[in-house]
Length: 191
Image 1 (cartoon, rainbow, N blue to C red):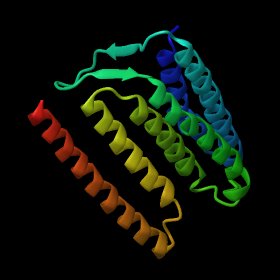
Image 2 (image 1 turned 45 degrees about the horizontal axis):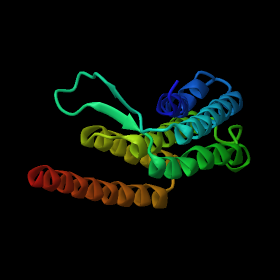
Image 3 (image 1 turned 90 degrees about the vertical axis):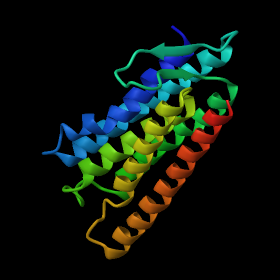
């Protein structure tokens, strides 16, 4: 199995980790632990995929059909991608373990599932941004990353300062997304 396929499987586990934990909504502490374990498994699988991809003699691009009328689902893991994937697979897993004490599910039973879901989606989207080889896929992953980061950062929505910071972040990230759209349009015109 090629390294990029293993990396994609790890990214899928990262993204689904919060959903796995949300199955335990009635028991938030158990859900938080399941989320962390699934996220850690996705990180381990992704790190293994990085090692496999690094050892491959040539770059493998995975292309899959999708229903969108433009772009394609194309991913690859070159040496630069592998360099950036390292922190994507290590930091969210460590942060999830840290969250057991920082955001105790027993103290936040109403919002733990939302934080776990957004955190897992954020980690998965970051990985997909790094390996995307199509502009449309990149922008979709970027938007998922931006929105999930917003929901993770604003989990304490009752605090007015958190809500304000969330809006500032959302506006700033969408301004950056508009700049990416403009950049891709210029590149398209130039080529």
